[in-house]
Length: 116
Image (cartoon, rainbow, N blue to C red; front, top):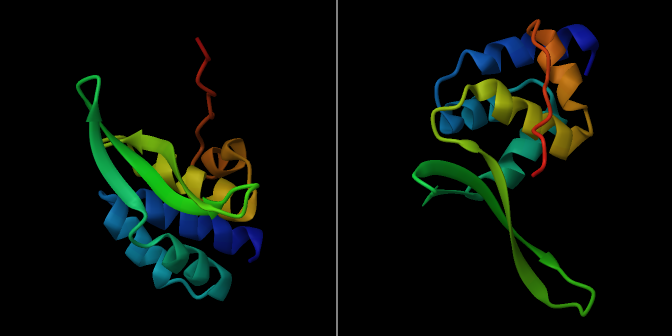
């Protein structure tokens, strides 16, 4: 995917209001790699209320060192967060594009959360 196509896609995705809308737009992409990545994630998100926040998690299974399937859970974003957060996560997880590069497309600065 060319830089210009990436920028256009990111800007379009950030206009969506929900994670399912973003996934559908990714599946409709002209880039087959993007489509395949979006399809591979379908059905892998769960909403859970933790600490009075509705959080969206990526839930997936992966083979551990012993060859057994193990379930993993990764916090992606909170329900109601802007879609840029998910878009940046998607391109980082699937294509190793840094969060700051995705944020830069829409003229924003990515601030990494501090660990406590």
